[in-house]
Length: 379
Image (cartoon, rainbow, N blue to C red; front, side, top):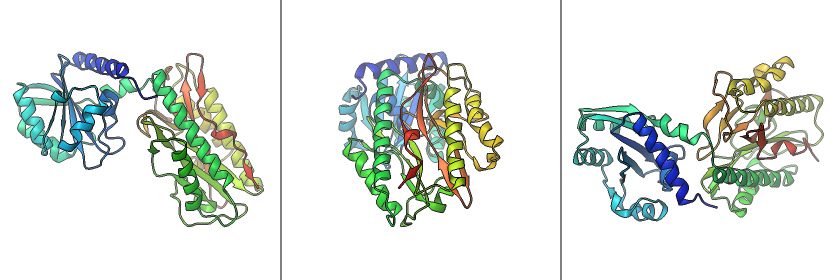
């Protein structure tokens, strides 16, 4: 079920309180129509600018007054239908920076502090025009203010993530069942993508990957016309969007009987993932969970072939905090959701990555997906 209006209100109120604690005179939430660049606006209102050409901003004053400014008039009606903001609190300015400056001046905000959420992806040209148009204003990076609120998922968010993981897992299984000698990576991918849409996914979450043989050694190869041969490693990495929330899973198998080396690295990655999941509990740090997977791989002599972080947060974005890596000391808290995806990519043998979605609970954790339950050997 979609997120209820009452939940959007609660999110808005929490962010408003954080804005007041930071003593911002205004919080400016910038967004544009690319995944990863509209999620803060979606999180607070229910509206998102899905077209890459669309840009907009939510302007929140300390008194709780909110105004949505878009650069495309035709999208105002959709914004009014999908968000709790009233149509009269929306306006359009094809020249967005000029519109933002004009709105701030009309509201008397020509001095003070404006928190800028989305500062890392707002075009530099836009930011410079804001500075030039409001020389008395101090612009303060504020993306973290909303990111902190998004860290802990609500029951409704967790359910959406659970469904997204289930659809993605079923899509990967459909791809596994379609494997046959001579099939291409692209043909296999088409089966997976079709399954996700048939199971009512909103869309694909990112460019999905299916790779065979030596292409699995790369760890992140887009599908091509490469065809399957007996003895090839097969790696899937894909996800779907369900009610705006992103699933993201990886699975590896072998078409035919695994070689000794293939079986060795497969079993090692499974053990590493199981050790990491056992390490997930409230109070553990992201670095400790990363080490739980990385250490056994290193002890087995394959440390240099595990060349990425163990995981990343999942939610409205494909990658979001927390990040499960060796240099991240973030303590885990109930409600956090992230991937656990150790991998070994061995030249001349193939690559193995197994990725599941994990929820931190009061008692430890819950695995929301089932990628590690697929058999390594496909005949």
